[in-house]
Length: 217
Image 1 (cartoon, rainbow, N blue to C red):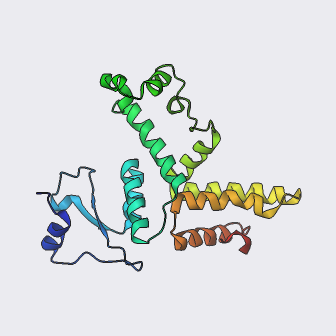
Image 2 (cartoon, helix red, strand yellow; image 1 turned 90 degrees about the vertical axis):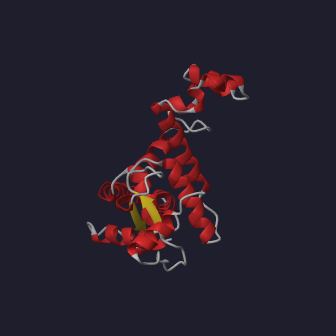
Image 3 (cartoon, one colour; image 1 turned 180 degrees about the vertical axis):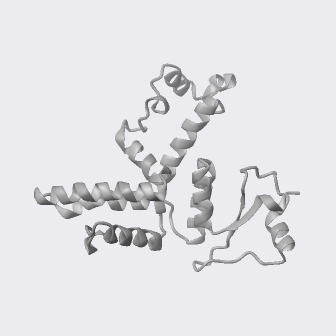
């Protein structure tokens, strides 16, 4: 029988796990990343967004994907497939680096993925080149910056985008086209968390005074 660490947490702390404003129950995070370690000091009660960020900081991309899918199930929505695809790519590259990916197992050569194994061995696979499956290079690098950077670095990155935007505006480039990068970055990092995105936009407006209402979704 599977150990119910949520019930254990509630019993130990004599409390009920809360529910947020979107009717999503709080989750129990294993601090050391070991799901078999259910000691009470290793269990932390957090919101689903906090849980996602904690696993992102730990570079546990597989758990991030599960959390995103779980959140969208609660909201009866659809998860961002591009973000999930990118997290899957990061997870695969991490597993290759750690030597745990199926490509590195001898028995893998016996299944239906021989072609991919051959591409990887010849350093032609997109896992090796840093390209995604469509051959795009720089987009993955940007998304990695958006997801993995600290909040301070992320805001500085958006400020850099805004400096470029202001320069391009003076050259007559359309506002909607060049604002897309900021919205794309916010969606990639924060998903459906509109309050967080609006707070970041507000911070951009207060910093150097170069934000205006056209940046809101």
